[in-house]
Length: 628
Image 1 (cartoon, rainbow, N blue to C red):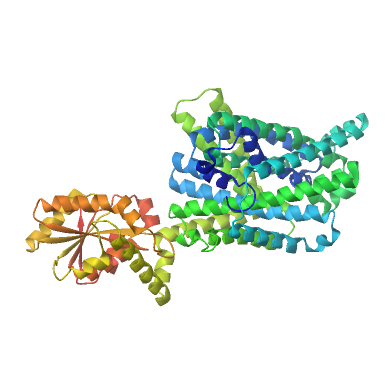
Image 2: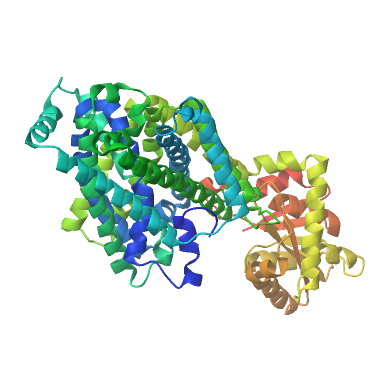
């Protein structure tokens, strides 16, 4: 795995090497290392929103948490390949919804990194006051160090997650026991009374409190990433691991929220600095300095642990989106020395740093932005599973409870969208930027601009030559474009056929055209289109074997029966249109033939219409012939 804590994506990807090493206990450890950090900052955020009634909202959201947890168990065994919201939304809705889910969860990861690292430094400042005036600076420094560690690629194991989670959980239990042993019936009565005292909350504040309480369960989605690494059977491992997670949260979150909100002095709760570290102040009040030190040590380490996990999670989402051609290939580039995706890591770190610098120590604002991405991802996942159950006619009690959980999330998310407008605008802009980047990547907006520059044109030409050189050295019957150029004088043709898959009607039209012109040779080209800002030299032989050989060699065999010699050609390009135009000019043909696209209107919007592109870019002396 890459650096830092046992990230969910890294654990999943290492499953083949580790032979599914994740037992239910280790599943609990990884998930609790994420979800267990929320207790350190959520009580303070909720208190600022709804005052002493904060514990009641935790209890209300707990109902939805338990119902959603059971749905995530089902997602684990339904999707043993992992992937979380991206996989669920892509399979149930469409790849574009998977993209949206990936962007929403990326926002969640960005804010997790920001809020966790900030809270970690805030907790440390409780013991080291000199940090108070430099919290933002040390937070940025922590994120920079985490990025460095990830780029270097320090490896960890799930056992580290177990040690961290068990330590934090034990200390939290210790805080609760100390408080319960020292308070009497009077304090219990006063605490319960304070829950319902004060001014009645408006409907707006009730909804705000309910929406904000869901932050206490952020991290639940991480279990869906662990499926590939879980011990078999996945259903049993996921169920037991989730039982441990739910049990530990039920045991700690409500009581720690109750104690910290109701037992701390008003002066502490009103202090803008101490509001950010309620659990530390609670430990100091009832257990003294030793217990406070234990809380600060476990909380700060686990929070920074979670920040690193979020960085890893974010850059793995980027890699997945790049593999689906939604992000530039630049994102997948790896450091030559360490082998880590340094560009993706830098983006996953720079965005949280910008959030910290822009928002500052405003945990409420960060929490609102967190809810935007988290609840949106929860909704896509929960609704997706509901639709799967409906299609399978599984419409009993389980289906009804699942729909109820979805409705609870709908209320929470739409409250967040409507009431927390600054967070909605901020989060919406992040998602919009991601969508524009995805559309621009596939529409070739950025590549067309960049490849118009001489420097990038030279880079592309060198990379294409290297890719074709790899092809020429491989054992294949397919020619590179450079090889085809060398035989043009000996085997001229009037026609170039663009082919991505076997197309008998297109091939037949091309044969008839060439025969009509007195020719006996035909060029058929496969353009290996690599979406992104740069064309990179890759293992072209493997690419040909996987994608190009079948349609090209099929065309060779079929044309040979009719007395036409087909020359199968392969080349690579950042844009299929550019590759076709380049091949047509290099081979000296007077016509390019392509099949009518069966792509949908939405696909044309995102991917670009090859026919329109050829019509605009082909030289005047080369005709385009559309078949079918």
